[in-house]
Image 1 (cartoon, rainbow, N blue to C red):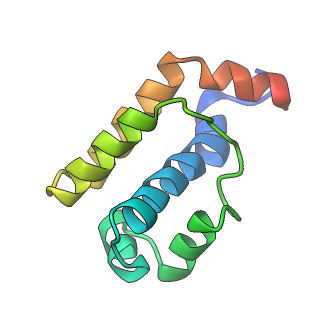
Image 2 (cartoon, helix red, strand yellow):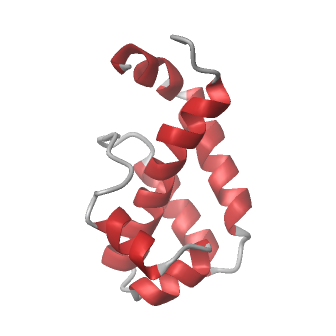
Length: 106
């Protein structure tokens, strides 16, 4: 990585994408209010608004992980701890080479 440690890339690039995808799924596909989504994800209403409007988490994944994000959204709605799902999604994204893709774009 070009001078950045993997944890730094995860914090700055991957975590916001995970939050964006989860917020978007919960609000737009599951019809959960932004306020309730903020409570579920441990974020503010304003942060959810920015994630849903793509002002945060700007890296596009295309169809990469769409099923995994849906699975996590449903698990969160079913009461699964958010942190466990975020970690699961992060590991998934790393397994499909997201760190290398981001590194190429930096």
